[in-house]
Image (tube, rainbow, N blue to C red; front, side, top):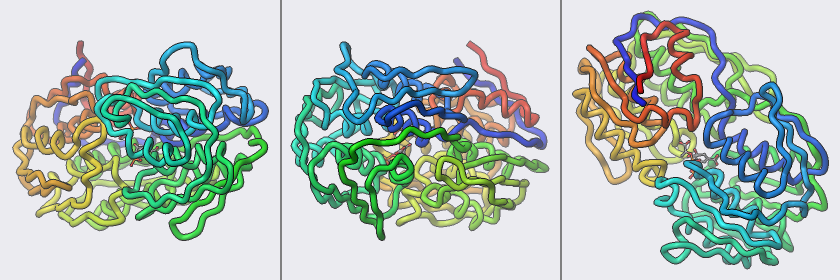
Length: 433
Ligand SMILES: O=C(O)C1=C[C@@H](OP(=O)(O)O)[C@@H](O)[C@H](O)C1
Ligand SMILES: C=C(OP(=O)(O)O)C(=O)O
């Protein structure tokens, strides 16, 4: 499928973006281990989170979907069952890495695989600490690549210093810690998203945190809980940047998750001169939320690096589009993690933005983008990466002439309904076979 984007007039409206992807995965996975029924509202029905639902069902957890509510019939800490086929995570790194942690401490055997992108992404970063807890994991390239096989094992606790700030690695170890003897500890080099810690605590797991160090013990049980997943700030970022760069635009986004480990994009857009207001809302599922109001205005280039990077890692493709529309140079550094996402996002962002006539230098750990030149319509490719697809669609809104994004179906991984929302705001976009 391809998306056709025409140059946009002012975008205006008030919308809610779909539920947070990270929180949706965790809601289904963690409540599966609880005693009793949990109802999850605001769940993201994107391909990645549906892969998590399919995997939990294959592990013997009854999961019903009724009128947009996901109902998880928790099987308890020791109720998962051996799946009778390979678990397929599709395109979802979060699913495979968190499941690796969860499955390491079971009594049965399981196999995990995913699409071509997943089978290229490094799993050793999760497997290595799990192996040191006694897990029995193997896979291609000495256990670094899926398909991966996990044999049940008796785990023991470790104290682990993470070499990279990764919420997926941290979460996998904490989940294994739920099944390990002793107290498992994880130290991060800089704060990554903490949805796992918040949710496990809410479910009653013995977890404690102080300045970058998290400890977890083995709970007797987790309690079921109803929750509402807030809107995904990573999805909101596409609409926010569209509003900021399309002249005359005004947007209100209701009910967006603003966990401080995720709000780096708001800090950076603010530093670039973005006009927006943040009005605090009711916390949901132990997560802060807000109403964001944004309007278009001129942006200036900036420098991004260090501990900000984990707080906006998934927003860098759309930040690069904001940088292309800003006056002056934007430099993004310390973001080598982008090389191991759904695509090598340093390379794919550079390759696709250049098609709009933007000057982009690719660094080993980031990008230098020269902003301020008029963009020309381009024929882009998603490379099968949802965030590249949507970032280029937004670039197309300010480009002169038509833009085409090939491989548009990738957008469904995290943001089903993106095209409908853009249309509701007044953009002229259409999908063609
Ligand atoms: O834990 C999570 O839900 C995620 C963590 C991040 O990955 P890393 O842990 O690899 O940084 C992020 O890029 C991904 O989209 C979701
Ligand atoms: C990197 C991402 O997700 P995952 O690692 O779960 O595939 C993302 O959503 O940008």
